[in-house]
Length: 157
Length: 157
DNA sequence: TTTACTGCAAAGGGTTTGCAACATG
DNA sequence: CATGTTGCAAACCCTTTGCAGTAAA
Image 1: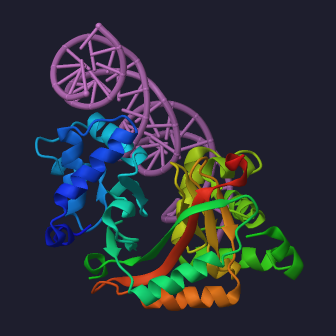
Image 2: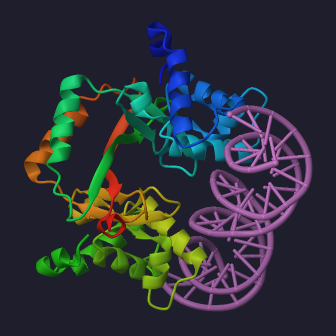
């Protein structure tokens, strides 16, 4: 989530400390490969595909390691998978870590996914409306996803 | 979208007429296989996976035909793909055809997807809030997707 | 010195495509 | 009879897994 937010607060180290703590909780280590993934996710201003993550991690991490580490990070509550409209899995840091609730702009044409944050009043009315959704008996909501689907600037040209 | 709505209004024939018109528009025929898919989608009260659609179409349609037909129906604006949290594509009739805007309950554990309709006032405040999202320059929103992610009744037990 | 992690290669599994046969306008 | 459609099988491609070797606690 937008590197400048980490820079500004000078909390990059805190981020890594948080990640390490979360990994410890599930008895996993914070290896260089995992750190590289977290760095890549922290520097991006949008969810990254596994291909992008493999490319972004210095000496390219092998597929298997990348996928396994993303799975570990997901289970530890560090990363979250984001579904777009194409066949690629995307990942972003969990909002618990970034402290920034946001939504996505998803392009129907190329599948690109962008982050977008709603002004606080808008977010509040959204949350309010979500709470009023008549969910079926027994369903236990944990989170929601609210995305705008459309055509991105590049594809609209 | 919920068979009783079609029964009540007696508009199943209208549905097929609409579908045929839309297919014609993209120079495609309304074959029995495609009609079987539309029937299956119209009778379901939730998005169906391709596996479910293959099973639902009388003398089981082959994979290739099913996928190709779903693609055609999608391009014709008849069906829409729905992304859950698992690896299966799901399809539903487009809201333009059903006239029923709705959202989804998605189970993190088993991937099941259920339809849910919001009361009109809730829907209006949702739409209102969506319009206020500060979308990036050039992005052209077409629709939105609002899903509740959680644990379904079966998996919660 | 046990347990976690890596990296290569191969296998999985949903989806797509080539191609010959068929059906429809 | 020209074009769209089907069905079989194979190919595709993202993702997962087996396994032997390595590293951290």
